Length: 112
Image (cartoon, rainbow, N blue to C red; front, side, top):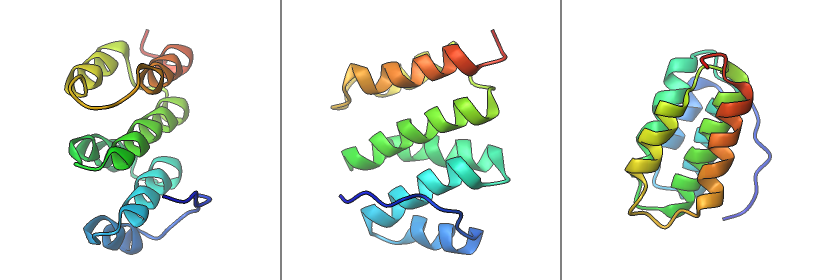
């Protein structure tokens, strides 16, 4: 997996990336959507749905995207974090990756 500087992508391109079998394209779609999409609900839903991926890099990108959403939208709470943590407890995700999400929620959320 190589780093791709995230940029605004049109919705049709994001949807193509999601249905494409390329992990790199899917990761670009997740990150781009979390940062730039005007449809914030879709951005959150896309990130959550990809936590079920069989690819660990897609899962990690989804966690990172949720951190972006926590910082941008300020509307995730610790109950949400606990649900994500429970969902991923059998996956090979480091505690540090999940703690980054928790920290972003604690720092930026207005739902305290």
